[in-house]
Length: 307
Ligand SMILES: [Zn+2]
Image 1 (cartoon, rainbow, N blue to C red):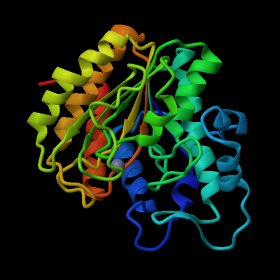
Image 2 (spheres, rainbow, N blue to C red):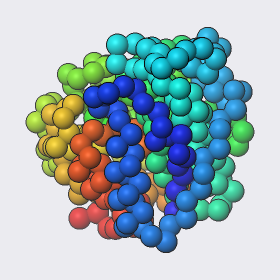
Image 3 (tube, rainbow, N blue to C red):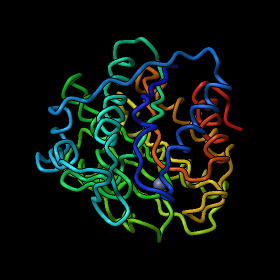
Image 4 (cartoon, helix red, strand yellow):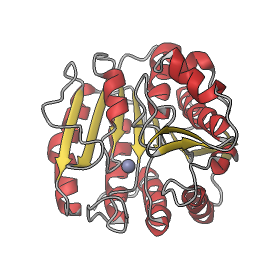
């Protein structure tokens, strides 16, 4: 397993009291370092503008990277930048690109990008929902364009629907998007009838959903469709805000539910993708849950057998 991060990802500050705070990433970094002391870390490089422009408009890339501002720049009612944010956004997207390159080169089977800001709400033209660039979409487009892959799966278990990821690839059959998410909840998309060109699969979860129902949705509905797609690379939008302690959502998941799904995803990658799997941190707003779930996620990827 390879781990990617960058100090700029800790410096991005969307404002006092914002739930998407630097302490989130500090919690993940501390927990992963304590539990996987031998795993190697790499500094995330910057994504190139060309890599960003595969999924984002020129206007959005310029707005995030080139807008002059002093202390804070507000992009929507809950998405804001500090002076370090452009660098953080470049490094978060660059982590995914570097991780894809590493697994494609056979340097490792699994890579985890401990980065922020998150990305899966950002659409081609719009930064939203705490997200500046859609890092997992940039990684998927890089896998398609730079490595020539024909089937890349994005698995999104963040409690929110990754509307940006779905939107970016809804007409591109080379990229599958599979998500479970609470509904209703921001951004209130991701209904079952949203199928793209047959490459999108959504499972909505009611407030209060527990681990048994979460596992059932993946085992019976989502995982079989990803299996049928036979991805050559598995990308994971790893948000841990479905945990019962999360302050922004209402699911009742435990860390072991993330371990279970992660082991299933590693097994799926083994079946179809030579084991190649890249995971990127998305949401998760309870520090205790982030600590427990990020470790459970990596334990699951590392081969703990699903119970
Ligand atoms: Zn989320």
